[in-house]
Length: 232
Image (cartoon, rainbow, N blue to C red; front, top):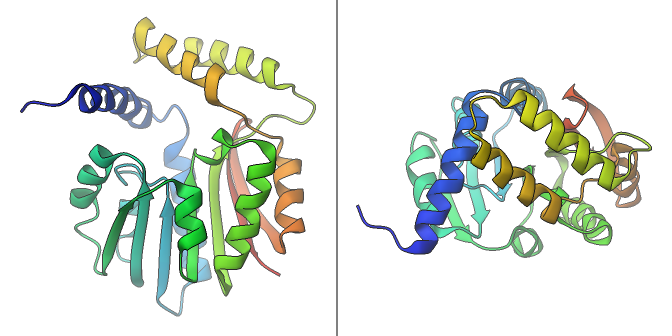
């Protein structure tokens, strides 16, 4: 199979990310179990619609949805290659599936009302003021009995952004042993140049200001969290 340079770049990055997921370096296993439990608890007695923002290839989220009473699934991502892979990964869901090529903030702004809004390791790329806008839009697009599920990295309270970048990269190099040095360097380069995580307290305050209440979540590791929010 031949790929364009852009596609080749995508698959190189996706291969590295697949190694991270397979080795559970970012605690996808623990977070996934908590996500499925939260969905089952919230929607135990009714069907529900899902908006997956920055869905990528949906490989980690799709299995968590299998067997649940889904009314519909909508996924949004900027990568055409990722969306092509997502078609296969979502094929086992027993509901209508719609995939759109879009920036996740644009997709959220244009979405209809949804029961569940989910995004994973995407929000930390936005500046602080745009994160506040994300919560405002999520509150607007959630059904009154809905649920916002946010998986992301957060800084520790009092930890500066440069300290986070330094310490996360040091932890990555010491723990992600399935990655070669080039792959570790690539992740750290992306992290230092693109990642803008906030302390959890700031995100919770932004959610509260947008009209959402904070529900118990999960932090299997100090920088990795599942955060749950619902309309007040």
